[in-house]
Length: 432
Ligand SMILES: *[C@@H]1O[C@H](CO)[C@@H](O)[C@H](O)[C@H]1NC(C)=O
Ligand SMILES: *[C@@H]1O[C@H](CO)[C@@H](O)[C@H](O)[C@H]1NC(C)=O
Ligand SMILES: *[C@@H]1O[C@H](CO)[C@@H](O)[C@H](O)[C@H]1NC(C)=O
Ligand SMILES: *[C@@H]1O[C@H](CO)[C@@H](O)[C@H](O)[C@H]1NC(C)=O
Ligand SMILES: *[C@@H]1O[C@H](CO)[C@@H](O)[C@H](O)[C@H]1NC(C)=O
Ligand SMILES: *[C@@H]1O[C@H](CO)[C@@H](O)[C@H](O)[C@H]1NC(C)=O
Image 1 (tube, rainbow, N blue to C red):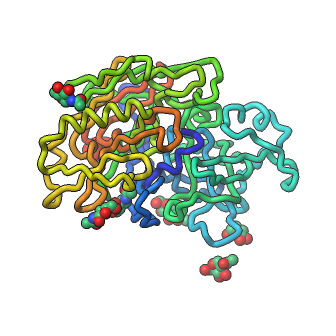
Image 2: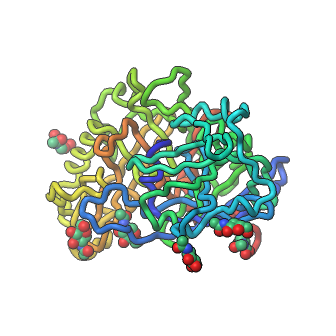
Image 3: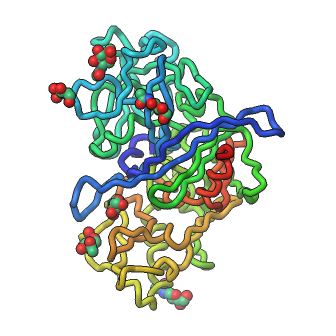
């Protein structure tokens, strides 16, 4: 989702304050970031809500010397981190002022970093002749807006640990279409497996996060070597899928896992396994993406899931399907229910949906399955990739709420376990 991620973001602001501590049984320090959520009103009243961004996951850290505070959207679906830099107008509330940083170093086109390390970027770099031959980067989004600037190195500090010469895009033009989002975050922290991502640059063996449910609640992001906590049950692991060949629709640096099937309650949808395997163009990969809110499935799978879900909820008097073909939540979610009497308990009425991965299952139930659009309407939280023009299955962060998510890069696998993320972050915070 490298090119389309920010569009699917909604404003869930997770302010991350860094804490650092050492566990008794290991050398490598863990870096912990408490996450706080905040929601915002969407900026448009359009009935067909294409790409409203209500929720984003953000972390707060410092960049530069002396340090400047920045708030960045956590995105496992992107490679290059970027910050709004030195805006020429007043539209940007949060930005990084590079002229105030003594450690700021723009990258020349002639450097090997510009020539070689940018190879996985979706849009190739160019040489900016107007800025004395600096390495020019462009990040684009699915709604065809983009932001561009200069590949730059500066010190990123996570807690007390400075990371000198961290590469990012210092973006001086182009903004997202959502002013709310621009006002709340300074930029984006690219966490995929590409050579320039934050994770790769830090050489992290593993990172984890746990997203809490609801406004104002807290979650956690953890950079470190272990997640073997006694209170956390065993994780289920699914291997990361690697491919060496370059295919047009396959994002080789995404966190790709293998989806094998989908169950509604205990009933496995009757679909050929091959439908979940990327084809010769690379279409049909399954990505775990913290930068996308909901989960999207290729059309034929989405339709099978929707039909089975409808079949199993047919008799529920509380759930009345919205029959208006013009109402499609966020442009891709066309199964919505109008609920009678405020909707209390409506989530308990629906069967669980389980995503079956190679070696692991992720069960989605209750409130994670029906999203409250307003007092009288709930929508199913799986959407149709075809309606967004996406050639992939994307597991969004809504379904990762109250799930401990571990990205184990050393062993090339993703692990997860259901847990209460607000309790997890309390447990991991220092005695307070
Ligand atoms: C940066 O954040 C820290 C910690 O929240 C705060 O104490 C400090 O005042 C902030 N600095 C600026 C310039 O906002
Ligand atoms: C950045 O800081 C410099 C030096 O203090 C200042 O002159 C400039 O106006 C600042 N830039 C912005 C966009 O605020
Ligand atoms: C930007 O904001 C400042 C303070 O609010 C104001 O004085 C200035 O005129 C604004 N500049 C532009 C270009 O709007
Ligand atoms: C709905 O479910 C019932 C019971 O599992 C099954 O017999 C029926 O064929 C299903 N209908 C559709 C349209 O899938
Ligand atoms: C966005 O958040 C607001 C405030 O919580 C909520 O009322 C609205 O329904 C949300 N919109 C979407 C598109 O999720
Ligand atoms: C909920 O949202 C739907 C679709 O936008 C709208 O038709 C309905 O009037 C809304 N209901 C309330 C109570 O706001």
